[in-house]
Image (cartoon, rainbow, N blue to C red; front, side):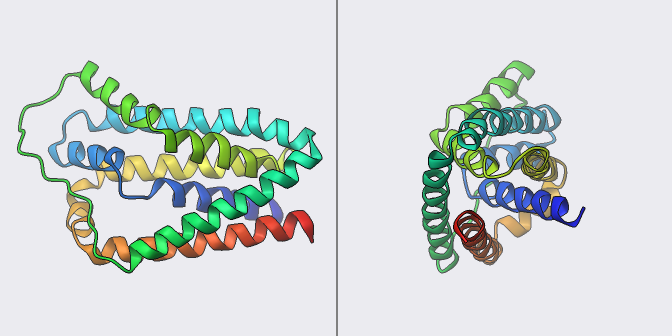
Length: 208
């Protein structure tokens, strides 16, 4: 049981580290949460889109990797390199002042249709979303056999759920924090450590 919890937490940490980054999707969710404007719909669309991509990666790319040993080795090395670079970029951001702008001069409410399609655009029309969820998360999930892989996927999906709904419904309390460079520097520092730790565990678990 302890092993499955560890795998779930690994998925939770990696999923959270990839999602919690300064970007247009997070800014949109936070901004609409501040305005209390279709924030539930937007958070739900972002979460469901993310969960779909994670499942596609885990069940698709993950299955291919799990059934092809040499491809699994390549994916482990590639994933570790990517995570190392990703962690380095997060660490570099942690050394510089950067904020997530949530200011919006518009006070008009958006329609449900507009909210859905805008959220889908931010979620699915971003190449990084496919790289992070389908390729990277799918590749790392493929290092685990069933049912352990389901725990890893569940952890990543849980991270997405917690993050988007926290942004949408905690916007008023979170916005002052996210407008402070120190908050993002601390978050990026934590993300860097998580990415490097998972890269290390990925290589050690595959080759040692």
